[in-house]
Image (cartoon, rainbow, N blue to C red; front, side, top):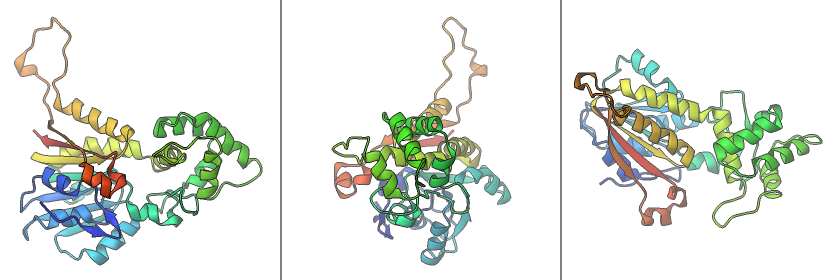
Length: 311
């Protein structure tokens, strides 16, 4: 087991479980597709010899800067890009099919939430930003201004599973008739006016999640990246994915089922052995956080780690 790495007050959820799930070969090449504050990257590096390598991806320039300063290691290469450019980057490095393990931790990192200026938090006042990649133009404020009431309602329902999506969308559009909606607390207060608080969740939780997913196109990027892992990994290479809400987990689960289970043929058709569907992955199951970890870190409560191995 490895010591949990702490950096910038971010505890990597399911840290030991993720590192163990990669089944690290000491001279292997690994990808941390969601570098964040580098907790997982440092865990992988500590299991590698000199000949091993880690490639860290992050679309957030702050994460790349942090790693350059705080993880000085010649075995680490940093790529400032969304993980959906995975195979394009690996192609340039001549590493397609050469990767021993890929880790994707889909949670938003604590430093991103805790920095009010980034606009991810409904507990601190800041600009309605929510961009993972600060070089993109579309912010949450612009998206809310330019989207129709129906588009907002649909996004809140689809990406946040928010049952009150229509009333929230109409309240936002009504407010915008007389004022600009530019701050996180303004939006959180609007939502609180029409959504009753529940015991464990702030009324704005689902809406903020949905807007973040919409403006960063997170689900499309996730699907594209999962598809690319098939070519990126070598035989017996591992893909380890940590999700934090049911919408992402559904995408990961469906991807795993599609590529690790034989196709169901209609009843009565003869099975021809040499025409069987080639499976890309072996499903090695899922792991959830222990009750101890959830006590220490409430953000862990919804986490699910899924593991597959390339056939």
